[in-house]
Length: 217
Length: 255
Length: 52
Image (cartoon, each protein chain N blue to C red):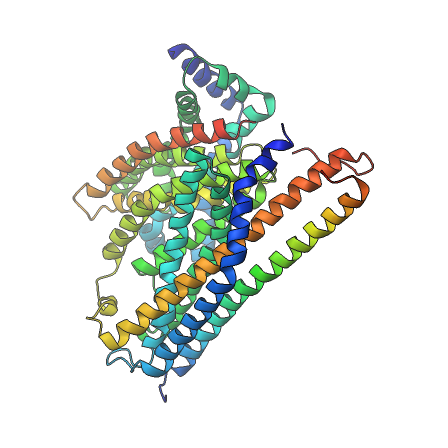
C-alpha cells in the first residue's frame, strides 16, 4: 500500500520541480510588495500589520495555486489511475496534498521571515509567523483540496475553488494571525491552530476523495 | 435505461407536485394573514422600547430573517444528507430551492442589521461577532449557488453541492467559535453588550408572531420553488429525449 | 411616531418589502415560464410523435 503513495508523491514532486512551485512564491512576494503602495510606506504601520499581510499573502498564494492540484490529472487521465491504485483514494489524495504542501506552501513558510524583514516585522514575530504558517498552511492545503476536487473538470474552476474555500478558511486565518502576536505569552492560539490542522487533515482528504468518487462519471 | 430511470424516479416527485399544487393556495392564504398580523402587531400595537426607542421595530424584521437564514442552511444540510445517503430524488430539489431563499433572507438580516446599527452604534457596519458570522454565512450561500450554476448536469451538481454543504455545516460551529473569540480579542465589550436586555412581553409577542409568519413564508416559497424545479427537470429530460429522438435537432453539447 | 430614527425604520421595511416581494415574484414568474415551456414542448412532441 505504501508503494502507490510514494510513487504519487515522487511523481508530483518531480512535476512541480518544473517551475510551478516558484510561482506561488512570486505571488506571495507581490502581495507583500503591493501592501506599502496601498497603505503607505510608514514602517510603524507596516510592522503592526505585517503578520496579517504575511498571512493574507500566504493564504492567497496557497489557494490560488490549487487549480492545478487535480486539474492536470483530470486532463491527462492520471485520476483514473488513482481510482485503480491499491491504496485507498483518501490516502492518494493525501499524498497529493502533501506534495502540494511541500512544493507550494513550504517555500512560503521559509520565505515568510525574509519578507517579514521587508515589512519591518521584528525577528521574534517573524519566527512566530513562520511557525504559525508551518502549522496553518497544511490546514489550508487540505481545505483547498476539497475545493479543487469539487471543481475538477469545470471550465470556470480556477476562480470558483478559492471562492468556495476562502470563507471556510477564516478560522485558520483568525488563529494563525493571533498566534503571531509576540505580546501574548501563551501559546493558546497556536494550540487551536494545531487542532484545526489535525481536523482538516482528516476532513480534507476524506471530503476530497468523496467528491472525486461521486463526480467520477 | 438512460431514458427510463428519470421517468420512473418521477413517480414520487409527481405525487409531490400534486400535493404541493393542492397545499400552496392554503399555505399562501395563511402566510398572507400571518404576515399582515405580524406587521400590524409590530408597527401599530408594539410600544417603543425604553432603550432602543422606535428602532426596536427593525428587530421584528431582523430577527426573523436571521432565523430563516440559519434555517435555510439547516434545510440544505438535511437535504444534502438525503442526497448522499438515501439518494432521494426530492432531496436535491429541496436543497437547490432553499439556497436562493436562504441567501435572500441572510441578505435581509444583514441589511436590516446595519440599518439598526447606524442609530444604535453610530455606524452602518460593526465587525461584531453576529454580523460577521452572518456575512460569512451569506458568502457560503453565494459560493454554493456559484458551484451549482457552474455544473451543467443536475445529478453532478447535486452531489457536488451536497458535499460542499456538509463540509460547510461541519465548519459553521468552528467559524462561529473563532469569530466570537476574534471579537473578544479585538473589541473590549462596550456598546455591544446592550444586545440582549430582558425582553418585555409587549416586544416578545410581536417578535414571535413575525418569526412564525416569516417561517410560513419560507415554507410556502420553498414548496413553490421545489414544484418549479420539478417542472424544470421534467422539461430538461423531455428536451434531451426529444432531441435524441429527432435527428433534425442539433444534439445538446456533450458535458 | 416622531422618532429621530424614523428614516432607518422606513428604509428597513422598504428593503424587507423589496426582498420579500422579489422572492415571491421570482417564484411565481419562474414557475410560469417553466410550466409554459413544458406545455409547449409537450404539445409539440405530441403532434410530431404518437404519445406514449
